[in-house]
Amino acid sequence: MERWSALGNVYLIGTEASGDAADTDGIVEVVAHGHDWAEVRIWNPDGSLAEMSGNGTRIAARWLSVRTGGEHVTVRVGPREVRARILSQDLVEQDLGEVEIFEPEEIEGLTVTRVSVGNPHAVVQGDPDDLPRIGPLLETHAAFPNRTNVQVARADGPHDATARVWERGVGETASSGTSAVAVAAVLGLQPATIHFPGGDLLVRFEERRAFLTGSAVRV
Image (cartoon, rainbow, N blue to C red):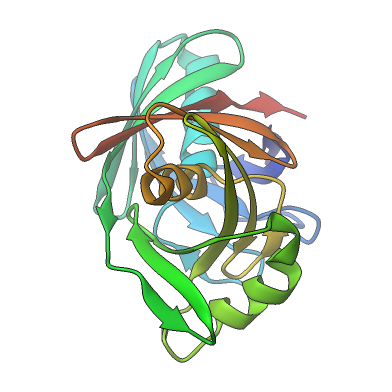
């Protein structure tokens, strides 16, 4: 297994779901692959499967491109296909597919907006420093019987936001690709730079499709 990082979001990646993932954000298991495609499973540290991961699929795309030299890679995770384009040695742009935004609702006195980016998100507009309180409260709340990823975000301008992320089955992480998309969608930022503790992710939309650009490096 190799150890890769996407803005501080660290995964082990390889063709077997093995290795000590205790100090990582999970394991990207490459189930099968060809020259320009890979099928993966993404395991959280608690042993649960993630339906989707922007950072995990970006790592998978870069992992494969290092081996084949390909500039375009399709990563399949469950029913979703992520098309990736290698922009440089570290930088990758991904087409994450369609995003679905739901009407805001009140949960435990918080205004929460659900978003689906192939996986579930609950976005709260507010002070990102409130994440340690809000994250665990919403992740396992009865309103989310299958649990959810949680973002607390603050708009800093028409194209910028600061956010922190509580990932389902993980806890707080340094960054999250699908979370960046969820935050940009809820805040109505287009294009957007989402600032996480681990670094910046770039998001743009073409109608309902989300495109994400960020780094992936072996560590």
